[in-house]
Image (cartoon, rainbow over all chains, first blue to last red; front, side, top):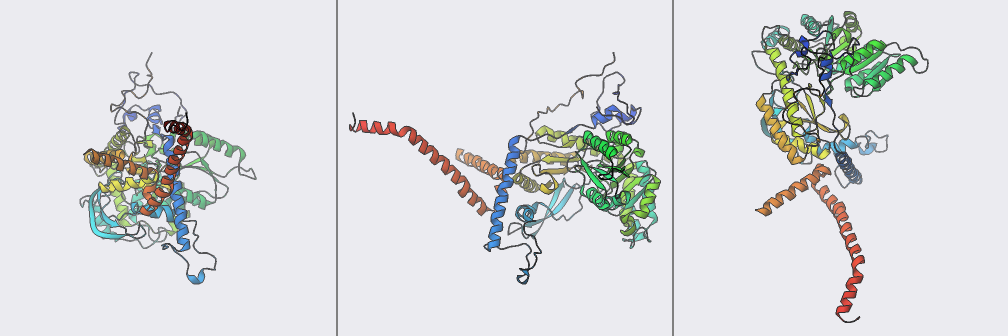
Length: 548
Length: 74
């Protein structure tokens, strides 16, 4: 049973004793009845995550498939070494053949023999705005994807299911962008300096105040690049003698920042509170490895929504653990800010948690706000310290004024400060689209990972041949999807990742679902062994908590 | 008409075979090499094995029957 933030274990009883289920879920039903942070209803409902396993034969065939392609990879490498086949990869000059080798042939075995064969599914050139529909340039390859050439045709109106455009702010409607155009006229396009030197524009301070009031914290700081926000600020917060407890599936930027900092890193199983508690107990009891001195700081690093799985962090449990063991919490809300929560304020709002409980809140503006960059928010002392000690603040170029203004106008729209209800309409549209899409996919029989609230929907495909065929088939039907394979996911769990957007209409989603159904049937992708009825359950749980 | 359907069904099965064994990712000549070397090889081995075993089981009876027929043996 999930512990609430104040350690209370009593389940929540409702007015007439029977829980009434709000099918829309996110529309503040729990807010009206709350009497404290982290109510039982919120944490129970928001932790409906499923990670169904595929039948055994799927894993076996995936390994066999990879084995076969690896064998052929060795064969082709042999042919290239012998000279029977032309070698397209980089090679040293004849005069340098006896020197220390520059290009390690075996290291990029995977790239050369598996990725190159099918790389027409990635890096597709887009020639329009990445909105709900976009245009692609058609390209073909004559030599099995070693080189490409454009045919000159453009594929118009491809439905975009891969862009992180959760609230639809990636738009080029001139009415919405008037303030951005004004700022470009006022400030120009570039900043020509770093933040600390002379690049601190008034518009940056305006943005930071707005972000702080949006999140409900004391103060915040913005950076020009989201990846650099993580990788350059974690070294400023922790150093040698500190301990970082990071989730198994954290993003590369967090891992890079942790490694750069020089702190000790321990990994706990994904979203597993027992694993985290065990590590915390051991850290507090034993201290640093050889000297057994207490750790200077213990920092728990988690993400709001994990982009490869679609799972949501168990925030109330982590906050309870952090308070018990006196650790700090770093929450990376790259995908969840703006996309979850009844008014778009991220996982703290989803779980009804006090934002002051999270020590360092980090997020990016790339996903829900249609801009670029990142922020770190928290107490005023923390942010003032980062202004002077973070590499990104001191050395990196400041955020461009047009991008800053785009974030400001998007945030004001979400908060409702411009007087219109456009923002809240988009958030509700996103929640509705997410629920509809996920429910329909489960009904069709696909295996989906993740929480029911998350707009990131990974559909598991498993076998490498099917992954590639899926991507090509969907493009033939004018739907653009992102498929992810081995280095980014475990080897047996290749997937297609759909990103639902508030800009998708019900029509577009229906079109996508229909094509998915057909492709799923023709490629045999429906591995799920659960049975879903088209009618939703009347009550969420099988036992009622009735008044006596 | 039924022949066309049959052909369609067969080609669907072949496509599934290509997808599941990841032959879909390989070039056409590699698929031919695999099909002839491994698949046909394994099919040949299994067919030949079955023929030898059946022969071993039934050959004595067949030879006795033939000899009876030609009245070499009584």
